[in-house]
Image (cartoon, rainbow, N blue to C red; front, side):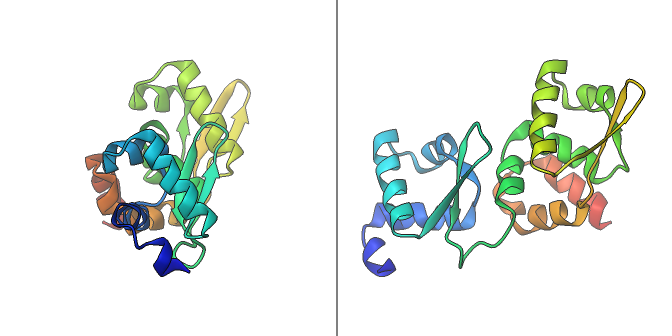
Amino acid sequence: MPSKALELKKRRVLYQHILRNPGLHLRALERDMRMGLGDLRHHLDFLEREGLILTATDGYRKTYFPGKKEFSGDKALLGLLRQSKPRAILLLLLNAESGGFDYLRKKVGVSKSTLSFHMKKLEEAGIVAVQEDRQRKTYSLPDKDKVAELLITYRPSFLDAAVDRALEAWLG
């Protein structure tokens, strides 16, 4: 019974935080909630067993979402938007038709290997499309509306001026 599961104030506050900020990973929750890692994991496991939250993983990190009734968005996309470098890449592509590897690398300010790592995650998740022409790769967002919708919906939870600028240009 959900009401029984949320009787404990600490657990209820954690659940409400996940409702407002879906897609956060464990360390972000630890920082935001100012809970010890063991205590946090205990409450997250409990909420998951009760069906109040769901988890997703991109192969590298586990992210937390409200249950099916409360969240129907794209978990993979939102989980990636919660990460600073993938978010920076997606924001660049949101207001551009496409971007080449070197352009993205310079704008995001990462090494070639780091950008390759993130682009592979975005490609595997089906969020970014890649087109190869000779030795040059060009990236684009096939579903810009989906990316913009999640950014708009959860805009207050990002606390990122780049999100605000990208959405102003997108909505402008």
